Image 1 (cartoon, rainbow, N blue to C red):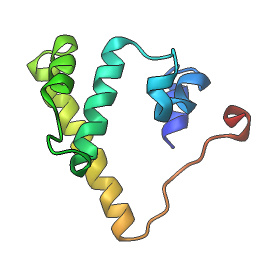
Image 2: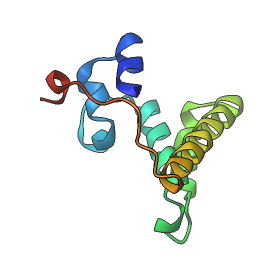
Image 3: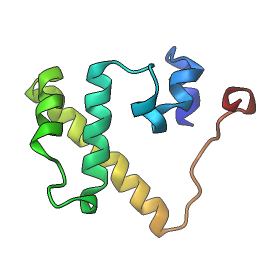
Image 4: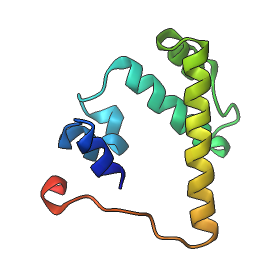
Length: 103
């Protein structure tokens, strides 16, 4: 589902299939990397004593104003809620990556 939305919005297959490896690929801007780091930290709260270190927050704040940061946090929270509801109710994620794009 998300892959198709991204593709329809003009994203390249390389960016679509490498989001989970964002640290190791050249396809994301510094602002996107900051947003992805924030999303990862907010999602994985129990991974470290300080779940969202100042370094991660400050990097995001360099690229996004207060309103954009608030929107980003709401989006992260919404995605996390849906993921947790799907896990709790054993729902299967919608959509799949087309075979040609996964190669």
